[in-house]
Amino acid sequence: MAKSSITSTSTEEKVEPWNVPITKKTIVYVSVVCFIAWTASVYDYTLFGTLLPLIGEEFGWSAGESTAINTIATIGVFIISLAVGTILDRMGRKKALILLMIGGALASGLTGAVVGAVSLIIVRSFSGFSISEEVVNAVYLNEMYKKAKSRGFMFSIVQAGWPVGALLSAGISALLLPIIGWRWSFLLAALLSLLVVLLATRLPESPVFAAMQEVKRRRATADIQGAHALAQEHDLEEGSHYKTGLKDVFTPELRQHTTCLSLAWFCSWIGIQVFSVLGTTVLVEAKQVTFENALVILVMANAVGFCGYLFHGWLGDRIGRKLTVVLGWTTGGIVSLIMLLGPDTGAFVIPLYAITLFFLNGPYAALLFYMGESFPAHVRGMGTNVAHVMAPVGGIVGSGLLSLLLLSGVPMGLSAMLTGSLFMLLSGLFMMGTRTTNRISDHKKALGVTA
Image (cartoon, rainbow, N blue to C red):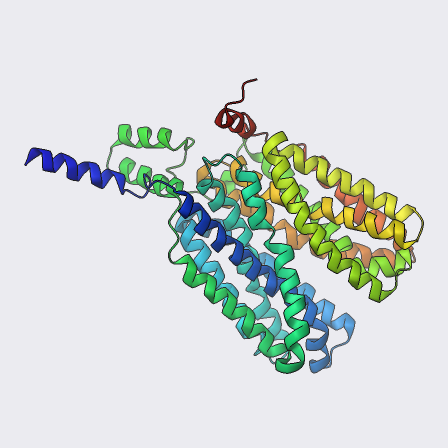
């Protein structure tokens, strides 16, 4: 009887959520679901930008009115995104992913039913849930990949859902838009998000989050020794048992890191707004590229961008993710300056523009994973999200600064340098002020490499 009891207890310990072994099969399933989730989020995000001219045409908006409505909606996206960090740290990684994709599905589906500017702004604000899905990926996959040797490269594959989602959005729209119109196009985006919700119900919770919850429970029952032992087992830093809020990512230990990381996001997204979102305008006005050729270049850039994600994810595993991001954005800023200052020939502009996007977008594969590992577990969701919400702010400011310079009579080439190139260089500078992790030394130990 005693032997049976011991066996039963041992079995129960093995199935505790913080002790469940993470198998290769689990890693593959988690990676696939997170990849589809990010692809679905980007699909909706880029679909709205692609179809905005058609939406504006139906409602009789001018180009200026359409962009103004989009700007107000982006402010709504920023406000909604502020809640994501708290959701991650309070509800858990799995539940957060499900909730965010449900919000994304509702935003996509209801976009097809809008009746005017006000309803469109309200509905699109809730897309802040789905576009923040990459925050969930950064936190969740960081904890699930904890013992993987090439975790940065693995994450880069998931993060490459951005160019995949953009390509799907453009391709499917080109095929089906003449048949189903813009309203039903958003229903397809909603169905893709709902597919992710179904797949996500089978995801395991992060063992790190489960351990955090158990540490809290043990402390509440005065099992201080047991709580301390479990916290050490899962590398939980002091304070993981407390409720967390915004102030906890601005403690003396984290204040500089959080501030510099947020400014890096802000500056890099100004560069994205100029060279990626408004890329066709910059190429046409600054480099005399025809609009048709600019579209072809942008399609090529998505393929180059995919390679950029993989390269920076791979490089981050070897030289450190922080250094990878710094070098990537700095190089991109320099290349963009050379492109804008050089000749207007296609042989010069096309490869340099592609390289600019390679180093502008690619570092995000290393950045997102770095964010997850640079914050303590108990504020990992909050810290990652505080920096991430600066993305839409940077997008708004980038568009506004570029417009202000152009309206003041500054040529497009110089305007793009003062906004896109300059702020790319600043983003690399701010990254230098962030926290340096010891993940590379851990990685070398896992590979059996000695100093």
